[in-house]
Image (cartoon, rainbow, N blue to C red; front, side, top):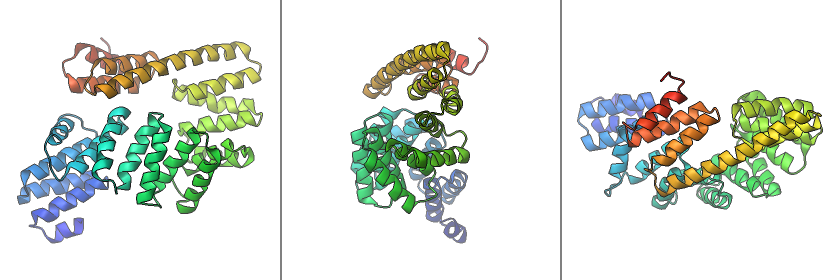
Length: 349
């Protein structure tokens, strides 16, 4: 599309289509350039304005683009699926999973033959721990496109969470055959092998995953789990401490760490970690409660501030700041939100 737009240097339509194509393939700088060209060449202003709003949302610029896009949904228009897609992705990446699920549900209804719509719906369901619904969504994505690697990965992950270990492993092996260089394949395959009791085969896969990405939190936790099962509490502790430090509200990692410490005979530290595990479980229960409130009323400010406070209390400043900012999108002058954002950023009062 870029080449076509360059060769047709006066065509507003060519520039607009080039910009739209660039946005949909995450080439954001190129998208901005061609949309500016489309406007300059005289393409319909409402179409350019909407596409630039979707580009802004994709780039993470919430105000004013998200509000503009939401208002566009109030009227019937042919671009409705693209708006729903942008909003579903935006809210998912912002970890506002209930809202992401709502937009992804509408998107999949508008485009039932689009596998991407079902994949994003499955991801939202998976993040909300609705594993049967996630499996159903990923299965529908595969019905649209049997080679969709994201759907295969999501379905395997959903089956794992449902305790369907053998089926999950089968899907992971199918994914390995279809896409051997997939981003999270080694971690997924190692986890599925471990679930099936194949610890010897799981260990190298998980080590490879962590070597490829030392910040892969899930791979570190799974590696710690497998090392514990193999009786190597000392090495497991190393990976699990890193995981807990990276994500203080990971109950699974905290529980495995307590187990490792106990096996190493460090009873005081094990007891303290078990106490912390109860705190983590309580915090996660509250977080689920606040997310439920947001699901019922996406514009509610109070649960967003409660999440900001919760994450700040547990030393997770980035998440705290994000939730405080989300409240400020609703009410830019909200004093409590500004205070929480300042504290999350470590600014002096």
